[in-house]
Length: 226
Image 1: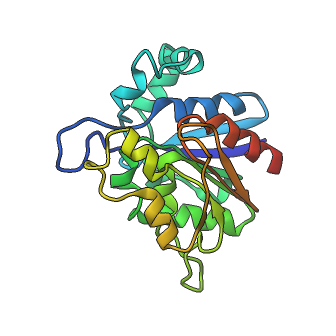
Image 2: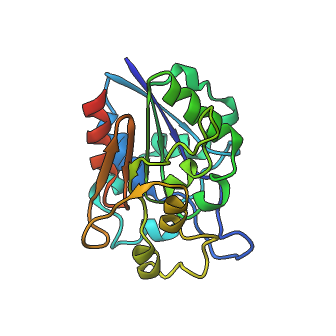
């Protein structure tokens, strides 16, 4: 049985701004649903432990697709999100895959988190797969290899684009522009021709998806490597 650890945000608002945010639920459940069978063990974590906040925009009628709605109405699944262990309690050496979900909350509690950085290095160095979607790429920004080089330096990756940030009307609320920061660390960043279309990049055991339309495709790419 392959083991997958999924890491969600614990941030429920935009830093000092009281505007609510959190996990973009669809980015979790479309990946989770793909692996939700007897061949895989999936464990959910967040940063601080306890409740995982959900971005209210991801629950709007125009974003709440059938799969996401099914999980949102599943009490036992939602209890996993309400009572998640902290990543501090995880044992990354036991996992074959780590997956980072998005939602704007991650921009505030993923980039500098040392437990995230240790987990990524542990899983990547023992031959596991590191994957992320949308803003979840913030988890990879400051991870360095043993030579002090950014893990994403010269890697082909994608992530939420600057154009999409403008379209989401969040440019003035975010602490940084993700596409810009990925490029600053030497990543070979690419994106779909049109915003908010599914797009995935795979570079060895690094799998990244661009936006909320991409988590199932990330799962498919991860499964192919597994």
